[in-house]
Length: 98
Image (tube, rainbow, N blue to C red; front, top):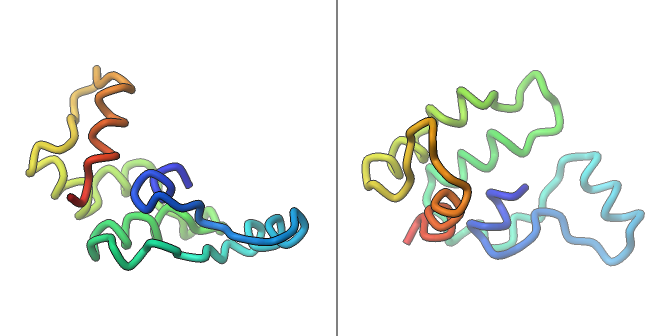
């Protein structure tokens, strides 16, 4: 959900009541507002990670090896060392897909 919010500027689940919001989150049905402005690989990254079913949701390794992360590493928009600090990672995420 954090990656979705950082990349789109929107929250993945929209509702008018708390109960409706809870139902959407439990069902795993995001609104995908702002999704159209993302690249195909960024959308696939979000879709792979936002699944409710843990058996089909991407693992951390699958996310790390996704096309989108690979593209960002190749473009040097994100760091990949084991010692990456949070500030530079967040800056990298915010600048993604630009």
